Image (tube, rainbow, N blue to C red; front, side):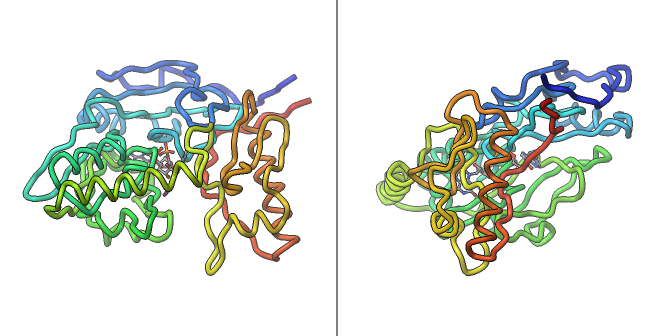
Amino acid sequence: MVTSTENSLSPALLPQVNGRYSFGAPLSSLTWFQAGGPAFVLYKPDSSDDLQHFLQEKSAEIPYFILGAGSNVLVRDGGYNGVVIKLGRSFSQISMENGELVAGAAALDRTVAMFALQHQLSGIEFLVTIPGSIGGAVAMNAGCYGVEIKDVLSWVEIVDSKGNLRKLLPGDLHMTYRKAILPEGSIVVRAAFKVATGNASEIQQTIQKYLDFREESQPMKGRTGGSTFKNPTNAKAWELIDKAGCRGLIIGAAQMSEKHCNFMLNTGGATADELERLGELVRQRVKENSNLELEWEIIRVGKKVEVV
Ligand SMILES: Cc1cc2nc3c(=O)[nH]c(=O)nc-3n(C[C@H](O)[C@H](O)[C@H](O)COP(=O)(O)OP(=O)(O)OC[C@H]3O[C@@H](n4cnc5c(N)ncnc54)[C@H](O)[C@@H]3O)c2cc1C
């Protein structure tokens, strides 16, 4: 039996919005892990104005969490007792403005990379293999193949926790490896990237090289969150995990991938608890084996449930 002790919030505390509220919405289908519990309410703003209004009027008692494409998030089995905000189509426009590529936060990284290819623009080819959204990419300072968001970011537009629309420069975000420091509670709504005119076939070749490499080395189609742990300074998380004998390690239906052992997989019907316990077991074994503490890269959110 699963028990949860947290009180529910009252819908009466929520402001009137133009967007949509869905009470008790399942979140598992919105994350790559396909595990975990529901949101008290899922809110899909219909515009930046709607989102601003929501944040201006929302009761301070109501916590909120912004979910992107869910490719780096594990929602715990007890779900999220607050508002999960999910940006939709009105936040996914991509355009060129003053020589910069500007993308809405809900645009998928891959779509943005393909837009750049169509317009013969180079510099952001790496985005093609990252399965998240632009908002998540900024928040995580996503990167691969030697490039990360901080190298190509020109500016971001955020809605802060008070509902103000603000433009920030990369220096304001103090971006480091898989981390950006956004003002507390703020939501990225647009981001602009530095791109340069390039040669279409070279851009295409680079994209294909990255895609092929991914396919060979990582379980890209699995129910996963990508790298489970960050690489410690001067070490590779996957090597430490391998050395600690955790490649393929299983708890329930959760498994460390055989193909890339820093990827954790839901092999079918895993609970978030199984996935999280597996991650913690790996951390413990790596600590015993290498005396290094692995830091979670996966963002874990929501309430653990007690299984009795
Ligand atoms: C198969 C696979 C491969 C991956 N490979 C890579 C890789 O090579 N490099 C890499 O860096 N990552 C990789 N990842 C991880 C993941 O794709 C990235 O971290 C991605 O940037 C997350 O984006 P998302 O939209 O899915 O964000 P989510 O997973 O939904 O959220 C991640 C974090 O970003 C925050 N966030 C999301 N949207 C916003 C917003 N609009 N404003 C403010 N905060 C926001 C969330 O609150 C959360 O804290 C991989 C994941 C998978 C499943």
